[in-house]
Amino acid sequence: MIKPQHHAIVVIGAGIAGATIANELLERGQAVCILDSAPAPATACSSHAYAIAHPHIGRGSPRLLRLTHLAFLLAEDRWRSTWNQHGIFQPSKRDKVFDRSEIAKHLCNLNLDDAMAQALDAKDAQAVCGINQNGVWLPRGASLDLSTAAQDLLKPHPLLSSHWNTRITRLEKCDAGWKLFDESGIALMTAGKVIIAAAMESKALAASMGVRLPLRPVRGQLSIFSITANDPWVERLPRTAISGDGYCLPAERLDDGSYRWIVGSSFDEGEDDLRSRESSDQFNREQAKGLLNYGDGNTGTLRKFSSFIGVRCVAGDRLPIIGALVQRPGIFLATALGSRGVLWSALASKLIAAQVLGDDFALLTRLGFAADLVAALAPARFFAGALAAAPALGALASNSKPILPSVPRAK
Image (cartoon, rainbow, N blue to C red; front, side, top):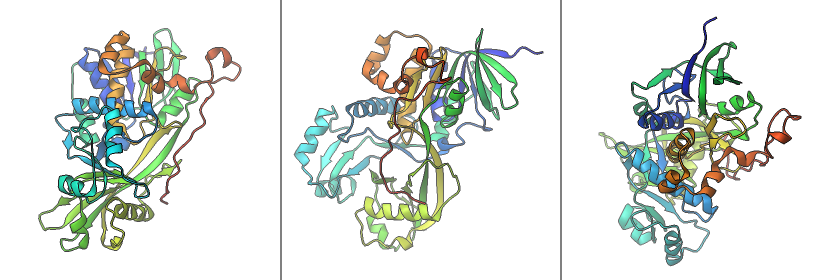
């Protein structure tokens, strides 16, 4: 019998998270083997060409605010060469009084200066970014083509080996670290350390080691609309991105005078159907009216040109799961990125690389990580105790009840 090939570090999953982590390790002089069940990088949700990125500015969890700020700065730095900075406007809720000075104070408390976030009334927003609504202008907001970024990160490298069309279904502890099995039960290789960055597939891989992860899919459909040159919508189309109840990118004017406009996305909890739905497009048409505050807009003239359907992976608390699986030494997770793959993958690359290489925590501190932020992302937050309480159960139990936001659904 041929002895399985051994690798020091194996990354399972070549989406934006796996690709970014692998590239970080390569930059630090590590040999990396990356596997994916697809024939190329970024073929699933990371084939998304229109992912937006901006720090969270709401009044929710302080840790989420701090994490997205840190992650945004890391993402901006990592993808500066392909970063499509067009700014993002976040409208205020129309059922709430807009207090510009109070919002400006809140942004200051978040350590966001004017270069990062500005509270604008409708008049100033119209002048600055062409949006006649009250809200917050995020000048450094951007979008990124995840597919192009992932492929660039995994360009040929002397320390990189890639295995495509390779699905790993089971992990088993062995003397060399971990043994990786394919669908036929064949041990393909062994690895000293394994990084699982395989979105929803992470759940089954963790289960093969007796660990239950509270992951669930969320289907999202993005609509690409075509609008004729003389349509009344043209006067309303944004020259920047908008992020609120849904989001849209700047409208693109074509050579014939018509426009192409990307609006999304539907939010279908617990679903993984990748077929296009007309109901989802109609849902996005209604979101378009809300994003532009154009209640009289005729959605019938937003003609479908194309769509993108992706299945996001989320955890119960809406934060990603990033870090060492301490109950299974040598296993690291980077999953549940949800709709913030641009941000969380940049953050994951730094955190995972530091843990894999055993860096001193002082290095992470210099990057902006604090101990409570690392703990907020760690897989351990979901587990009710260590293995001492688990052998009789045969698995680690989730200690977190999945909670997803209550939002309109598109069917």
